[in-house]
Amino acid sequence: MTSAVNSHLELEGSLALAVIDSSTAPLLLLDDELRLIAASKSFCRVFQIEPASVPGRALGEIGAGEWGVPQLASLLKATASGYAEVEGYELRLPRKGQASRDLVLNARKLNYVKDDNIRLLMAIADVTEARIAEKLKDDLLKEKTILLQELQHRVANSLQIIASVLMQSARSVHSEESRSHLYNAHKRVLSIATLQKQLAPSTDDSVQLRTYFTALCDSLSASMIRDHDQVTLDVNVDESTTRADVSVSLGLIVTELVINALKHAFPNARRGKIEVVYGSRGPNWTLRVADDGVGMPENAANAGLGTSIVRALVQQLKSRIEVSNAGPGTSVSVIHTQIEAVHAGGTRSV
Image (cartoon, rainbow, N blue to C red):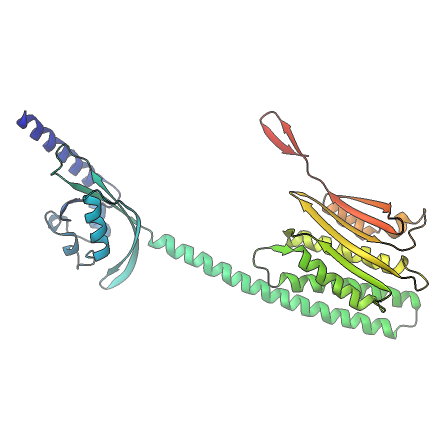
């Protein structure tokens, strides 16, 4: 019986050595004293170890002693005792005259027929190139972010200059119609400049709409409302965020609708309020600009609120526009609805 068991152990040992020797991954087979029983050819090749010098040597003695890491030795001994397992242990291996290598180690205690034949199998993954590539990617992303922020600052400054030129031109022209067009262009450029200021600190292509709409409306209020006791512009926005490109379209819509309300809702020094409201629930959202002014003539809805700019932006956002009597005043809503319809095989958006 004893002879049969020994033969079985010898066969298992031979098979284990053959598997390790032929492995394409760096592998080490150690005993409970952390002496090497075998090393795969790939281990010896990658770490420039003479294969004949491996058997019987302590782990810390191979190479130039770089494998003699106290923390690793403690973990391996705990693994041999059954108290721990080495999983994803990261080690920076120094190499004399060469660059260090970043390794990820995994070790397991192998179960043999007899408990006194403790064996540890350690697999080594060289992740040096992957870490270099990851760092390069991170560095490129940081550089891209810095360049993007610099570009946004430059664009915002350029827009401010253009707005100033438009204002100067508006003051110098004699035609009232031309002056009105220049003033309107000035307000639109300022709204885009405000957006750029909001985008500049953003690093993830996400815009917080409450902050943006508040800044935008503050800019419109400062430049277009002469008497803030007469007309007020309020913002009521939830915690929604959206992509930068969507926020540009929303900002332009708000600008057009607020300008339109300021121009038409409060004639003859009428007092009133304009409110910008935005709320979302999942993929669905509603933007509303309402005033408590005189309201719109029945035949003026298409000409006043349905401007080509707003209509084009609403279409771009795959939304719809609704104009209603606010009693008093006018309410304009841009509504985006995405319904999840259940069908065979899953759901789809409609």
